[in-house]
Amino acid sequence: MAAVAAETVLREFGPFAGHPEGEATLRRLCRTKPDCFIANTQQVETLRLLDELKVLTSAQIAILRGIQPRTMKENLKHMWLLGLVDRLETGISPCIYAVGYESARLLELHLERFSIGSAFRLVAANQLY
Image (cartoon, rainbow, N blue to C red; front, side, top):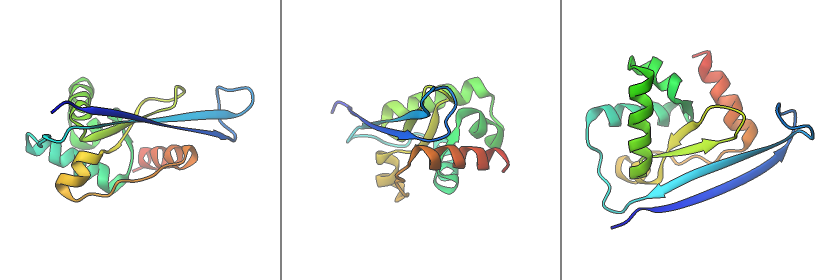
């Protein structure tokens, strides 16, 4: 079956850099693929890490997993195409990754809802991890 893509857009006002009126936009890009499967233990380890820490950038995952950043970016792109992870994009920060619908279904993980502020705070807190 073909993958189905969805996009959720949040707009919030606050002390966000990059916009003169303090507005920020968070786009959550989701995909679902009913015949999705988890291919290897590296994907499971990445998903468990995302489940524990909620959101991470590809650089943060690479550091925590001891993987080259370029390799991690490619792995996350493949996982996003399968629906295993969701991409959260703001346009003013690197892409943020969270557990996707398919991995939540397959591994019984938590699907989180985010506000822009909470996503930024989690990424910043994980930077200190």
